[in-house]
Length: 379
Image 1 (tube, rainbow, N blue to C red):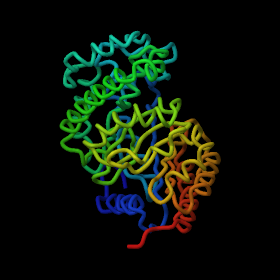
Image 2: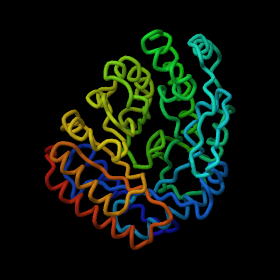
Image 3: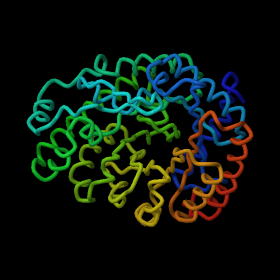
Image 4: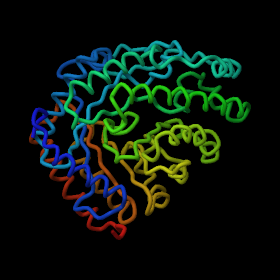
């Protein structure tokens, strides 16, 4: 298979394995996911600022994985201008360091006292069609949808989550002191940030022609089943107590999950609030996280997610093939028989075709053992 001759029935078969696994129905092996980020000699900055370059890189990378991998891979394209889209809607510019392969960030935090946050929340919200990086995202989402085959899903924009928006806009000390000193004001701002984010998602979905074109509403390129497209990033919760996560993160996140039910929350790790993740309203299906920053929390997650959630593990820190396979074996051993563990091998242009094919075969063997030992629900 290649991108010019995608077998729709084969992709549907692969999707059905994901659907069954998410419903905790028996599968021959647990899902395995791959991503390839190869900009073919261009820097990350060049790619982030050039939609045409990203489109062609996605086309080439998807074509390559379709040719290499005999199973599991569900093609998805990812448009990524950086982490800070919502911040740019409030007038901030992306700040690039001297290293063009380092992701852009925020040079200064404009909110230095809580009254400024209240003023933002009281003002008219930024227009998602015209503000910051959103016009770029809308233009190129529409182009991706038109120019890539319909069997290629699109990952949503990397908008973070309400607490991540506060992290980008608030001076760091203020963000954490507001939890204690101005809790109601912070909650009001987080609700406002969630509503801005919802408006952005609606425009992006409209640009692509509908929610079913997406893996999920945000950045994750792992395809989520129909009706489970919700996704919120909350890396800030790595530093929050469970009580603060329940009081501040969850109500704002819930505003998004009520629009797009189910799906996942992202936090690279660690996970002090792991026991609350699945208990959003409505409940969600799992966690997207980094293997490197999560492995110490496997026991906590295994207990909290038993019989009801999945853990999606990103190997995106330059791990070798041996480290990815050993890491997935460690996760499968920790989560069997009651929690689905899904590896996501995030690769770059240094991987050869043979390396990728061998990695898939090794992960497949672990995934078969993981599935054989899982406690699946009856049909």
